[in-house]
Image 1 (cartoon, one colour):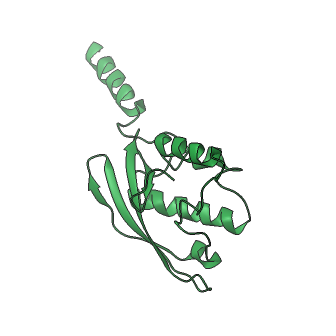
Image 2 (tube, one colour):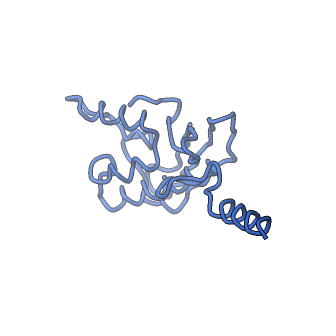
Length: 153
């Protein structure tokens, strides 16, 4: 009888314990490609709605990027000259159709770091745009850490 109770208790502990590497609620996916796609869908939608993701939606932005990159962005935004171009699209203008035309390559993963290529296909005057995104895995979730090799705006 004691053996049955011990096995039942072990089963309950095993089933209710969170899996190692489980992302914290509100963080991005455990796959780098999905994390980047979700970010750019959110980010470009905000731009198309005339919102400022770096200002008005900073708390949400923090779910997608590393704390190191957030600190760097905050420091750059505090400079008198600010940031000359949009850091996450590495351009001064965007095509509204990018929001619905995002392609993300298969990730190249090395330990807790990954890189993906992002293609934004446009129909307007800005046209197509390519980005290389660096990610870092933190607490089970992939977060953006650089854009086109830049970690400091």
